[in-house]
Length: 567
Image (tube, rainbow, N blue to C red):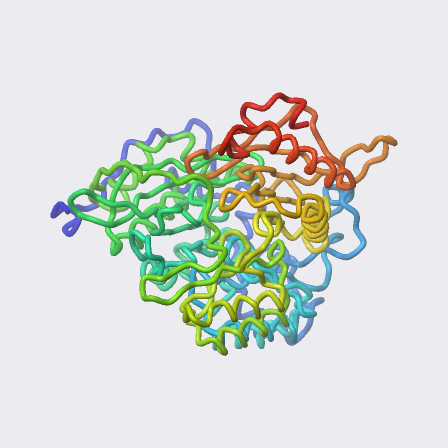
């Protein structure tokens, strides 16, 4: 690597054109808040709300909570009020937030690619049992998410999490959201580079740092050294992707500006090589650009993807090098993208002679009790621990290969299958109307029922690692990555054959990450009622199986199929 990497020059200002109209970019002096969210963050750093929760709100109860904290700063502590029961999806956009609020909280616990010991998994389980009505979900951000949390119990929950080496800090809010790390980091036989140290170091340096607690909006990070790109790097604000330089060896490329929701963008690949030890500094640079140049005037344009789309990758790299790093990055072609994604389901060899076992909870829904049972099995079989995945799955690492068959059998008993059907393996769902204030339709139970029905209708279907993915979202925000699924379902109210408004979905077909990365095909005026979903997907899959060419993936087929076959 050039000496410049080790002796960086002083950062210099890049010639970035001053915008004609203020977008709230701090770098150009537009520091006056332009909306209520920015004003709230200026009034008080959201990190300060932790003490108010510990010493005031938890002692005085829900009614003592300042509304600016309740519906704003609490998010930096991983807390949202959950949806009040009984409010239908038609009222989601018409009621004020306080009318949707329940007196209970959703709480997110970040794991950031961490290997969870049996003690940590047990702590997560008992928290759900004791304080969350036995709830616990595995999310596609590698979080554990609880519901029914009462403010009075938050200090005890935080204490238990801290004892387990875990935290809810900045799990939500305009902050560095929980990181995605490869579930098989450090053990996979075909791993290019283990990035565990870098994620730990980013977390140590920057989570809870006031210099990085006020972004224009959320900031999502992913890192993997696995060739399968198992963290959906194309859809994150910043992603570090394992690559090999012909002279310097294993390192990381840097991808920026990914994101989904109503204006989806895939990442710009900078085509660089950085060593493991440089990852935290480069993360700081990318985060600094977002903080300083990100658009703050409109929340709908406040994600990094909009800035990257306007600047382009070369300009972004120039600013990163000149203003934030003080040295030039090494050019290197971006790594080859794999086909599809890798969820690590099943039993796989590790490079140390042990095996890891990937299991599939149904659409991420587990429970406190199930996590306690999992902890017992991790301890019983002497496994190293467990990691969560970006596909709502769990991977158990460090298993003796001779004992793996018995472990797989016992995991089946508690509802965590290492040999699931293609539907149970490949279906994800967001929280949905059961608890989320933004949702319009039910997702978790609807997806569970859909899986049961598809298993009944296609009992022997086995498409291997390239199974048909179904991502179910309760609203347009794409928390379940709707646009990059084979079948993406975006919840909305639709009109049924009787002219009644009912729960339903807009359909996206053929989306993907990896080699075939795209946002899928939307058919004009094509919507499906929730009640008709089983029949629609069954017909779609049957048409694919009948019309496909030898070895043709669903993604490829959808792109060429006649419209009558996919409607």
